Image (tube, rainbow, N blue to C red; front, side):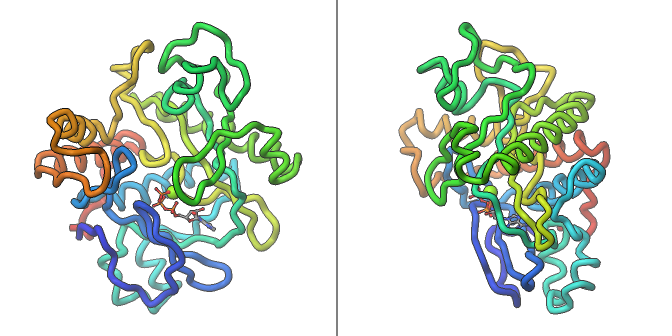
Amino acid sequence: MTIAQLEPLPLRHLRRGKVREVYVVDDDRLLLVATDRVSAFDVVMAEPIPYKGAVLTQITAWWLGQLERDVHHHMISADVDEIVAAVPSLADHRSSLAGRAMLCRRTEVFPIECVVRGYLSGSAWKEYKASGTLAGEHLPPGLRESERFDPPIFSPATKAESGHDENITIAQVIDTVGSDVARELQGLSRLIYGRGRDIAATRGIIIADTKFEFGRDRLGQITLIDEVLTPDSSRFWPADQYEPGHSQPSFDKQPLRDYLDGERRAGRWNGDAPPPSLPAAVVDATSARYLDAFRRITGTELDRTELS
Ligand SMILES: Nc1ncnc2c1ncn2[C@@H]1O[C@H](COP(=O)(O)OP(=O)(O)OP(=O)(O)O)[C@@H](O)[C@H]1O
Ligand SMILES: [Mg+2]
């Protein structure tokens, strides 16, 4: 089942993101549901991308499995049978939740986007090009776009409710969460990024940068939450096409971006909502890219038996 709008669930709806819907199960648990919505250039497309929601949820679940020994995380289950067993009121919604839902421990979220950058790209490249800095701190001169950082850079941002996240300094993180938590968030972010980068490298994917979120669970433990090392929270680049000195093709959204760029250049789209409607070939190519990301990262096919 391909889903842009999720049917109403018998749970309190907490939040609607560009891609995901968040529901309250009880004081201790949340249900995160990834729809098949896709955004590009900050605009959500009208057409859902088959399997995208399941790819995002199951990639997160796979990484959390890999990271089990490294970090305390929020996942209780991403298996729909286990979720329905734990929350029986969801039984009637089994087929729309299959693959895409994750039952999670609820936390109090730290209001910081813990970004780790292994390569100079996106907003970091823009700032560096303009002023030679990243979040106000100087980087070595002469770096090229997409150049690899060694070591990776912890580059936190604010969690903006609307509009763009803003890069902030470590000093601002310390002001917000205190120095102990700041140190821990930085250490965990670097550790997880390093693990992810090493695993992805063996599979032909560069994780150029990524964003983690953390919260504090009821027992006070710092907990990795949200989505983890997915194509939506990270920049994935095909390693065999990597070449510093210019921007890199996006592993997953390139067909979509190319199409939208073409529409813009042709004067048929001004870059704001509503977006142009997508030809089936663009939808299919994007779906294939997401499935390929899952296959490459996990080394297995996404189990689609219950998803279509
Ligand atoms: N375990 C958790 N406890 C509390 N909050 C959580 C937990 N896991 C994730 N969240 C929160 O759930 C929300 C997910 O919704 P979000 O709006 O980010 O959706 P999205 O689809 O990623 O959209 P966007 O592209 O707009 O970010 C985030 O605010 C995140 O902080
Ligand atoms: Mg989000």
